[in-house]
Amino acid sequence: MPGRRSGPGSVRRTVHALVVADGRLPARERLDAAWPGWAADVGLVVAADGGARAAEQLGLPIDLVVGDLDSLDPADAERLRAAGTAFERSPRDKDETDTELAVLAALRRGADRLTILGALGGRRLDHELANLWLLGHPALGQVPAVVLDETVRVRLLQAPDPAGRPVRLDLTGPVGGVVSLLPFGDEAVGITTDGLRYPLRDEPLRFGPARGVSNVRTTERASVLLRAGRLLVVEGPATLSP
Image 1 (cartoon, rainbow, N blue to C red):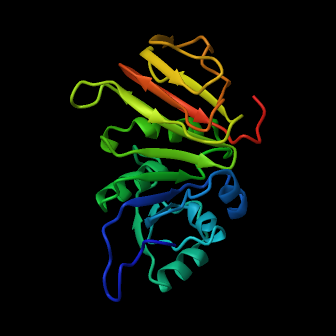
Image 2: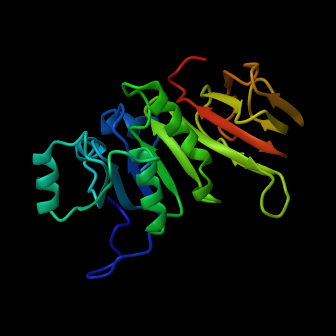
Image 3: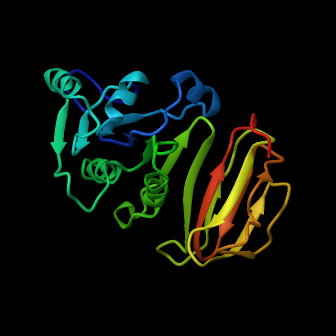
């Protein structure tokens, strides 16, 4: 994985952390084809319990496994320990999900960018929703985070910024890619888009109506600006039809 070492005996500052949960995970080549460069500059890999199996299937070197270990085979856990992987075991009765614990562990280790894999398509809808809600976790602060699989990229735009200014998110990608904008809360205010088929011009999106679903990128360089509130930005590769 690029960016893990800067020279013999030295470890460079973590820039990009991968958190691997125990949901659906595509083959590595499908992720690479859908989102080129998604794994660039990774400095830390944290697996949430059974997500350790998925991380290994993707060829990711695991630095840390967290959780109550009810989804990871004991033999696999012992093999990882023998290979030098660190573990942080939690009680089964806890307030956090294993994926949340993995996010918090990555932040404690200096992550200033997060990609969360395996957060979607598991056996439980409540866990899938809770994983998406982690994008709004207070501990993230200004750390950018994305939930990713081969069919979707999900990010959370929050405004205003600490200086009170609107916030812009780059939506650069292939023409024809689907972009949906969903208010994360009662209302997202002052939304302006550029490079999308159905433009918004300083307009609100309110909780309930599906107005922001299935927009389409018309140019490779697209963006969305938000004046106030929180907006879930859901993107699909150009291979998916709107």
